[in-house]
Length: 153
Image 1: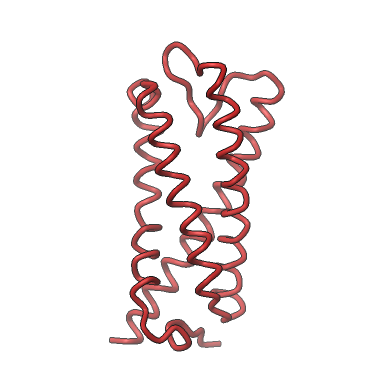
Image 2: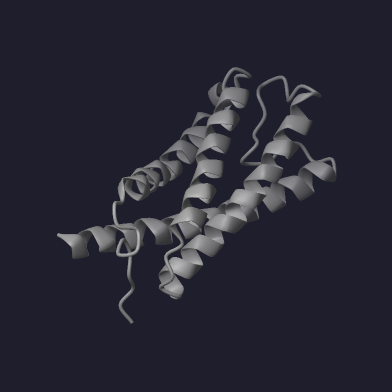
């Protein structure tokens, strides 16, 4: 039973590291395109009337905090999966940033009708996000954090 939990945790951590790596690439691309004057690309597809002027600083600020969480998430996954060094606190901090950022992103973009204009793009992000809260809950429920995750080399 314990071995199965460790395997599931390793799979979720690996997924989270890959997701955060792709997230970083998407944010860098979107930031470059938006700063060069190109209309909002994925993952910031605009509502039918475009983004309000005051929305862009909000999105860039959210992207900035995302980058901090992403870097921590990539480090956490690398340390855990590759090095066998499970850093629970780093993972929890990264996941907290990621989950709260997703909630703020949703709360800030859903009312603008961006989700209605681009349902496949926005709802696919939700589907890709689902394993993160599962990982977060599993990590929060751990009792003995020193034996919570080990890698077999």
